[in-house]
Image (cartoon, one colour):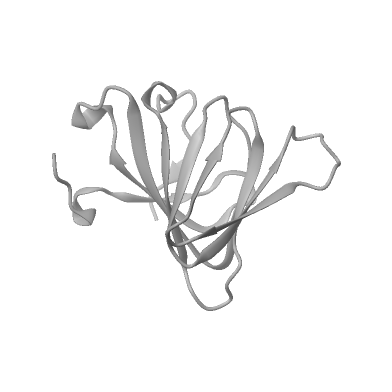
Length: 133
C-alpha cells in the first residue's frame, strides 16, 4: 500500500503544555496494519513535546532538522535526564515505560521525525491527546 503525505490528516499535539508540535498518523489499523503504527511529527523552531510516558516501545527516525530526546525513569525522577540527539537520517530506540520529552533545538528550522509504535497501543485509551489545528 502506497500513501502520499496528503492522504493523512495532521493534528495538533496539545497535552501537558506541548507547544508547536503536530502529528500525522500515516499507517494504522484503518490501513489493515496488523502490528505497527507509523506517525510523523513536526516541531516548529524552539518547540517541544512535553514529558510523558506510556507502556510501548518507540523507534524514532529523524527526517529533517535536529532534535533532542530526553528520557528519565519516571515522572518523579529528579536525576538529570539522559539526552539523545536525533538528526535527519539517525534512529533511536526508546523502551516502553520511559518518561520522555522531545525538543526542537533550532531557532530557525523545523524538526520532523517518524515514530513507529506497536499497533496494539494506538487505541483511544492510550492515544496522545490531539486536537485539529
